[in-house]
Image (cartoon, rainbow, N blue to C red; front, side, top):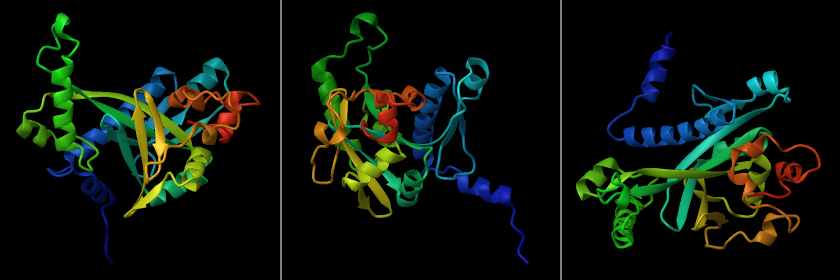
Length: 258
């Protein structure tokens, strides 16, 4: 009879290698960013282990105790992607999408990672605003070398190409399970091998889903009424304030989203 060492198997599964360590660190950076956002607002955000398809378990235990709020819990899946200036595509396992759509407490958070470049003088106050010509050239170089269907910038390639990359500025949007179902039914999730993909066009600070043919999700498709606020679902604070018959309540039900 075979005897299995569960601890050993778990360690072997999670072991980082030369081929996966950059992806591991990039993914953890995105999760830690979202975890920090929750803690900043006074919510508990705990990483799940082992991998159950969710990355974070979020509760409001302290706020329930000290602010007399109603207990709430959310199961969070975090997906991060390095962005070009105009587009980002996220890949989610099919089983994870099915789980999100069937879980009333399931939340998908897409983290947009915008590369920050340097001309070597960013620590000197008068040079902190980058030269637009140099910056554009570096971004084009970065996009050409590193955005060929990759989620994160390869540190090895950056070093080889001598690209002046120093980190990311990050922002995000989130979707509850009703929103995920709407996006799926509208064709904004499309299949790619064992995954579902969702792409976003990026226009300055506005991000909008686009289908595989490049069609943009129109405002008239987003809202049940013209008074919807498009910016609110960009912040996790609204996950916990959606109750009653208010506009927040409608967002929670999926009547308006994004």
